[in-house]
Length: 177
Image (cartoon, rainbow, N blue to C red; front, side, top):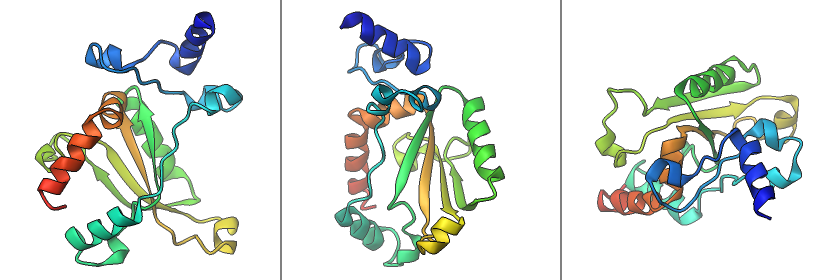
């Protein structure tokens, strides 16, 4: 019941973090700490995993933005990690860079104060395109597959998961991107 839900909120990140906290009344959005979810199947069910880019959007992007150069389409497989602070985001970025099994292909820092937010309708993150090189990925012949990890602050994650993504799609389509 209500008491169990409150305990769940506290386990997620030590406090009840919701979209209401950030947007003053918007629909609630919860985020789960990985450390808490590792040993708690009920929290694992709450994790929203990234989806593979839809073929229609991949073709659209190839035609609109990449002049049909398929090698530039590096976000077909993607995942987001949400952080409470810039310090935590920076630590994750350092951990990715230090991992010998990870090959960073490209990183885009849209949190940089020099970044032109007009290009993304105000949205900001750090996106890292990477490959995983292990004996397993080599055996499966996916060691050259590039995926994207989006590192973002909670305030942007809430916007991304709310009506903000629909507004961004309209913005992107208006710009023919």
